[in-house]
Length: 211
Image (tube, rainbow, N blue to C red; front, top):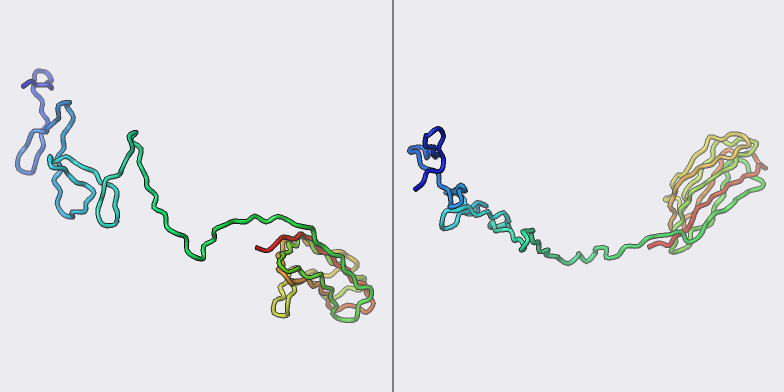
């Protein structure tokens, strides 16, 4: 036996204390520290020792037991992906939309009646969607009490798009993004009109196909 570590002629040794006795610390043939772990408690612990008392690390847990992680010959982790079928109602395809055509209209009523008046756009065709990006309304010389634009289907489906505070002889413009589905229209409404006024409105956007 040879002594590998001395300082100033004194022999050095590394001791481990087990609570009762001091014990020598063991190294292998290359001088690396050998550690023996004694485990108690759950048999499902990720720390396991082999028959020689050497530590084995089993870090993969399958829900019941811990298992070793597999690596390839280069030491890289190997992963096996287990796929499952999609639900019956899952989307299996994607689709991009693009503008098919420009839509728009110029609406007018040359002689209004007294009180409420309105103008309607064309209806969105079946299987299509309109994306309206611009709406404008002209306020006549006789100022009405209010001016609005609605997304119009039935009485229960009216949704306000814009509302204006009227000013005599002015055009009001709104740059928006409103989606209208098949059958919907834009209704331009003026309240409190004077009989004989001229009412004007415009809208524009583009059309796409519904999915």
